Length: 284
Image (cartoon, rainbow, N blue to C red; front, side, top):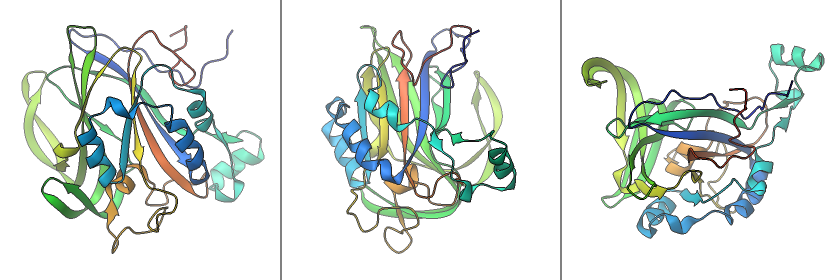
């Protein structure tokens, strides 16, 4: 019997008009940032419009497209890390001492999602932040906001095109506050939902055509020499830039590594191209 692939995702049940994606979020260590810069050279930033990339850059964000397989240079970055026993809780330490915990995954989330043309899907990127204040820059200038239970991510929508590609749109979204009841459409029926307050960053929306097997990749864009870079350092008067709010660990949310670096978000249009990151077990 073959060994199960730790990167395998579950198959989805197809619905008419549904576009299927594979997504992953990697949590890198701070000392991996130079290697991430080298891997980024192999990504195609030109696939995203220059205006969009300019807005992202001004907000400490970066985005590109991987046009084929995930390069080996990036796959090495997401290999499991060795456990540091100084940062384990009591239960984890017991497992470690019994030899049952020697590494932890850098891929903190992997799954498949299906998106219908009229039903954009919310995809969370960050862990919830108990409280935060953040700053962003758009065509209307610099703005700030704050809230409790803050979580960032993207509203993802898609539309199939006649040439076999799919137009994929990502709109950065910031959710905060206690969920409030509201009515919305679900499966063409009116349904009661509970939603947080949200900020949709339309000036930072990405829309790119993808062919099966191609991947959108996004992360923060803070240079190593920046004075405000790194975990636990405020950007300006305790106000986080978007790159930090979306892709950096701002609270002690992981005990397995001392200096967490950026998160990396990947969204691939499903196709016939497979590699070690998005491999699917033949038995599934």
